[in-house]
Amino acid sequence: MVSITGRHLRPQPPAGPQGAVALMSGAVFFHTVSPLGIDRYDDGAVLFTEACETLACALFIVFALRAEISTLIGRVPVLRRTLGSAPRQPIMPG
Image (cartoon, rainbow, N blue to C red; front, side, top):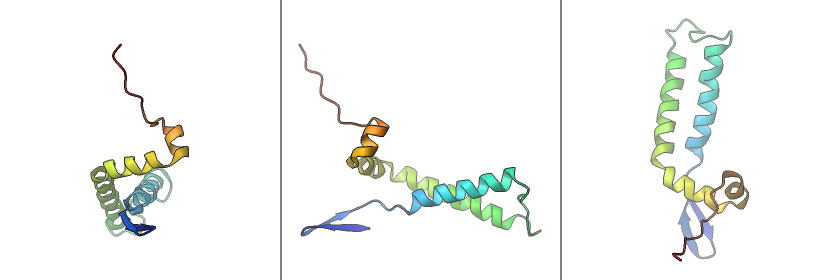
């Protein structure tokens, strides 16, 4: 993904893996704790297995892009204050 600012193109980390983690973790959670159950359609839990695999792949991608995601979060002032990742002042020997 690329954002255009002025005349420069800057690569941006994709938001898809974070959305997939949110969606699939909700799906896996509700299928395990609700009356829906894991094997809803008597298909050997194929749908649930695919949801778990998708969640695992999305978590891997988020882990692989953690530096880029951290940099992106650090650029948003509201998130920087909320998450406590404000720039730190160097300690001067003294």
